[in-house]
Image (cartoon, rainbow over all chains, first blue to last red):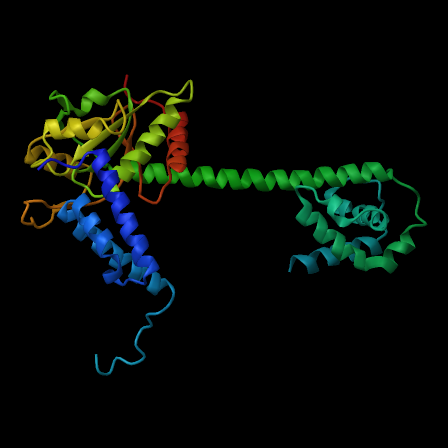
Length: 79
Length: 291
């Protein structure tokens, strides 16, 4: 399977950006963005979709982490 | 601490009644306050801001507290004119400022020298490599002697990082190309996925970036050897139903000097502008050890 060309890469990134914008607008509610999700899935190789999904999770986690939503537990008694 | 010291110097010198004609640095602190004292009702402090302004301003604030002592001295003989005093204070301030800037530049230069030396001692990229370029020609390290090389390790099936880093690398090359008098930099892309990145695949890939971008591939052993030599980590991920996979790998752009020696590396965090500036500095400092 040949690697995507520059055009194909850019089409994939565009679809991903649209999908992510939709997720941002709908606070991660994937059910609102089904159409963009299928467009994203058809533009990108499967491996890339998995990679971008993980990347999205990581970026969201990083946002929360930097906003201080994760605090170390006060006690280690029961851990 | 400094403030107290200055105040003590002022009062002790004042009490000894020293002549104001001498231009020794310590005495600047005496007739400088005279100038400021006279200037203060005439000009706002902002105009007195010279490069050494900090030191001067501190003196102004400190010494303006010595009002009563100073007024007593105004019955003294004239001494050097007001303009002369202002000029000499200004020169002193400028001298301080210049010395501070020079010290800062020297510190930066020394830091870069130490970094270059440390990188050289790390001895990355020792030993030869033998690879195929995207036209099918065999290439070894000696082929690049005499040129500056910016090298990146990646793979053609890379989702986003490799295209971004290659774009950045190409931007650096283009920026340096536009400058007359600088030697051309050879951009090189080496694959960490020799299984899929054949000569044809590399040729298709590099054409999207820059006409001079050279793709290098080879057998699994050859790629393993060059990656080891340049301390590049890579690890192919699990294959999916399409037999597709991504390769996890360390991300860095390497700079090789015309002697073929590893000179510097640039992480993902560095911008094209920062890399171009760094390459320019290395070019300026380069002295060949081979002829």
